[in-house]
Every structure is written in C-alpha cells, then in structure tokens.
Length: 87
Image 1 (cartoon, rainbow, N blue to C red):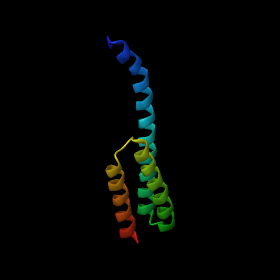
Image 2 (image 1 turned 135 degrees about the vertical axis):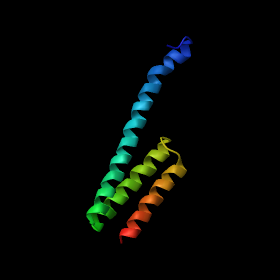
Image 3 (image 1 turned 90 degrees about the vertical axis):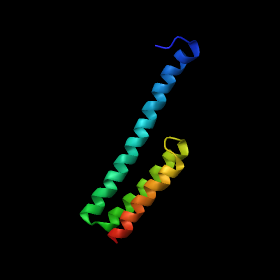
Image 4 (image 1 turned 180 degrees about the vertical axis):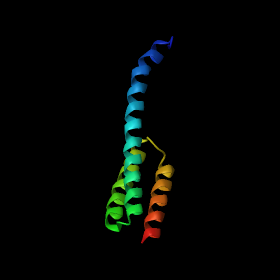
C-alpha cells in the first residue's frame, strides 16, 4: 500500500484506466480473431468487412494512447498483407 497521499489517490485511477485499456485491447484481439476466422473460411467478403472493422478499432485505441501509433500501423499492415495474400 502506498504511503504518500497522492499515490494513494492514484490507486483507484490507475485501476480504472487499467480496466479500460484491458477492455480496449480485448476488443482489438476479438476483431483480429474474427478477421483470421474469415480468412481461414475463405470468405473474402466477410474478410474485407472484418478487416475494415479491425483497422478502425486498432486506430481508435492508438488515438486513445492504449497502444503506440507505430504498433497500430504494424498490426494493420500485417492484416492487410494477409488479406492481399488471400485474394
């Protein structure tokens, strides 16, 4: 437990932010998983749709600061590469 008053105040704030970041990362992982499932099923129309959704989610969490912008670019690039290879 923290001894300094300001550190004690930050504990609930940090816990709340951690929960929000965890939720956002989970949403992105789910979006990527759905994209992967569409690619494996060979459904290009659904793959395009899920790619756009995943891309949007990834860039949203990068804008909020949950992940770094370059990490977001890397994730989207990897997905786009897989989509283009499936086509």
